[in-house]
Amino acid sequence: DAGITQSPRHKVTETGTPVTLRCHQTENHRYMYWYRQDPGHGLRLIHYSYGVKDTDKGEVSDGYSVSRSKTEDFLLTLESATSSQTSVYFCAISGARTDTQYFGPGTRLTVL
Amino acid sequence: AQSVAQPEDQVNVAEGNPLTVKCTYSVSGNPYLFWYVQYPNRGLQFLLKYITGDNLVKGSYGFEAEFNKSQTSFHLKKPSALVSDSALYFCAVRDGSSNTGKLIFGQGTTLQVKP
Image: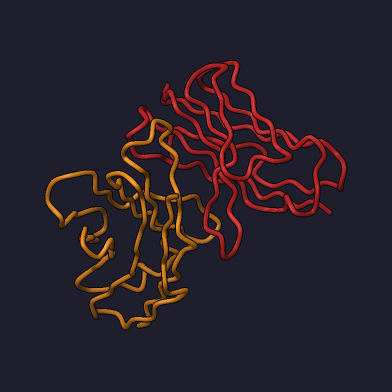
């Protein structure tokens, strides 16, 4: 988890509210990723970034948006949270496309 | 399309015995293969990876994995299991020809090591 922090670590919210999760890195890595972890599915990629203001969709991007205005921060926004977005969200970073990805400690989100 | 299968939801082994956690994969290009471990309420920790070269890869905490191209497998192994190895293990694959670096994960295998 060194060099990667996620905030908040836990959040409970209500259906229909917007939620923003933050990933912060101190490694100056170019690539950043957002995954969600659900039982029986492993981790699935939501969005990723390959540089400041450069982002692209992953396999489960519906209902999520991202922004990266600085190298160190990658924000994930649930525009209108739904119960199906209850999950544990992980941020990951890598220095290059082919490098190992290193993961943050995760954010547990509950949507009631 | 890329995919990863971990055929066992749980593996049980006695402390001191060898352990194997299975993983098979499917990619269109050359595979980049990874193993991660997750302890309760923690993030994923990198164990080892195969990119190219020797089919037997050694990683952290005494773990190793063998890449088998003909069987499209990348099984995780350890000669002597410890109770502290009990955790959730994930295999992941990236297509080496992809320009995105995206990882595809298996569903995970829980390893239970009993004293």
